[in-house]
Image 1 (cartoon, rainbow, N blue to C red):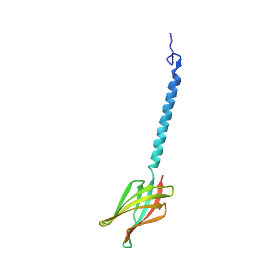
Image 2: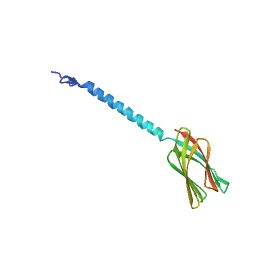
Image 3: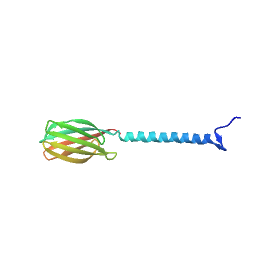
Image 4: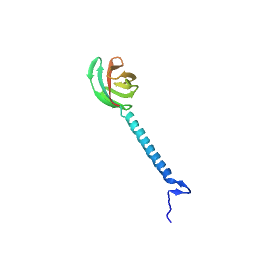
Length: 137
């Protein structure tokens, strides 16, 4: 006598199993989509062109590639150092958090900059100009 295992007590289990498999596939696709979209947000990168002035004189013009929300550091000579973090704000602007160290003095600033427009961070006699360009998103 042959038994059909997929039907037991009048219930067709192949339909239930197929629905479970389809649900697992849909969940897998949903998880993959969420992970992929999350990595897109984390991929923002910026080219930050800077000019460093000491006592009104240009002393350096370093350019950095900076990932969003990650601190980047640079030192010019032994006296002038700065850290900066670029935080996306909206489609056209970003917030740039800087910490300028000149000698023993440290000044922290938060500036909202428009992409591709120069902004200045100034502590009196020394200044740093920034030009932020979004290169990936």
